[in-house]
Length: 266
Image 1 (cartoon, rainbow, N blue to C red):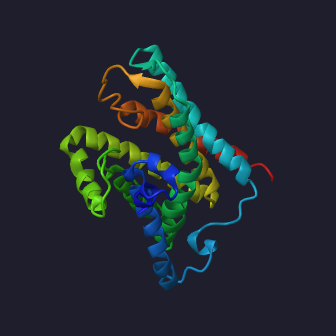
Image 2 (cartoon, helix red, strand yellow):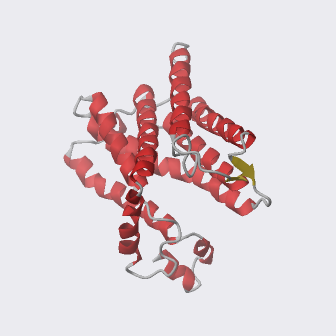
């Protein structure tokens, strides 16, 4: 629909974004909207019913989350360039960098509200903390993994959504690579859920999520992969043993910082 409007001269600036980007975000927004009746039936009337509370340290949590996720990821990228696994691109485009920055601002608010605010919050009402985090992380990783390639629907029609869903399963063709990507996404989902539970707030997971998107998006636009070093590193900084280790480091730093920060008076 959005691409149809752009094609007819309405909101033409939206035409530069591919269909899969709109479709994936639209699915999340639709899912969030459809959850409200379920929340009403589940007797959820406020953020407190989802395990969330006002956070007087929200600015510090947001900024810390960005640093804890972006810095290790960018340091990993710098090391990969030094090892000549990646190399700087010959030309640098500012527009793609702007898109990465915009995504790092908007996407975390949408996805954290849905996955950690609503999905995890409802699951936590069962009283089973770790099982709730496990299920929420699995849902997060599956939804992100089942994503069609960016240029699947070059010609947009009313059936493009079904075409995108069909192509989203192509990634299962390489079982080893699929498993590696799924494990990294699952760990990231667990870290974000853990941050939400420990702070009873969405600000730290929003910061972590934003840092990962910005770090990965920025690096992919300034550097290109020279060789495949699987299982250490797959096609990007979110696949392989090295990304798992980087995410684990972020988790360790986050928990250590929270232990120190929450022991101090506000």
